[in-house]
Length: 264
Image 1: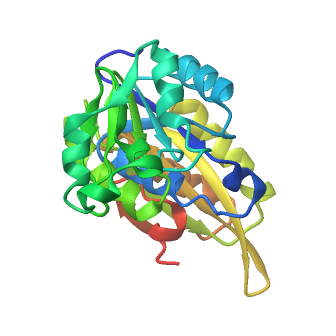
Image 2: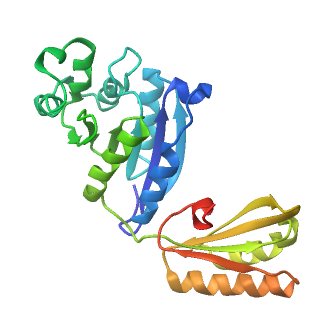
C-alpha cells in the first residue's frame, strides 16, 4: 500500500478472447483516463486467461501492492465466466446467491427467467459490496480493494461511474503536450536532462510520421502545476536551443491520452 498522498491501481483484463485477438480491449484506456482524472495512479495492466488459478494468483499478488485492483470480464452466465468464483477463492470466502443482486436483476428479467445459467450472475462472494449496472441490471462488486466489473465496455463504464465516487482519490494529474517535428534521436538529450531534474514528473515521447516527416508528441504529467510549468518551459528552451520548433498543443486537467489531447 502507499502513503495517503498517492493512490495507486492495477487493471486485470480477464478473457481468452482478448488474448486470442478475437476481441479488442477497450477498457484499459477508459479506466486509466478516469482514474487519472481523480488522482489515482495507474501502475500496471495484466491480461490473463479464464483460468481460476491465474486469476487467484494475479489478484492476490496485485491487491497487496496497490490501493485498488480493477478487473474486467468473466462475470456473465456461461461456463467460462469464473471471475466471481475466483475472487471468492482469492479471499477465501464463500460465494452464493446474493438477494440484493437478484432483486437488481428482477428489474430486467422475469421471475421464470432467473434460473439456470442466468442465476449464476447473482452469485456474489460473501462480504462484497455491489456495483450498480444501469444497463443490464446485473451488478459487479467490490471486495475490499478489488473492483470486479463486466468486460462489455458500455456496461463496464456505468459500473465504473457507480464505484468511482466511493474510492479514495489523490491529487488529479495535469498533462501538457508539446508537438515537435524531429526524430526522437534529436530530442533524446533534452528529454533526459529535464527528466533528471524533475523526478516527480512523468515525461514521455510518442513518435509519429505524418506528411513525410518524423515527429514526436512530448507529454509531461504531474500533480504539481508549478513544477509542470517550469519543466515545460525548460524543455521548450532546450528544444529551441537545438534549432527545433516546439509547439504547445494541449494543457489538460485529466489523464487524457495523446490522441485525445490532439483531437486525433
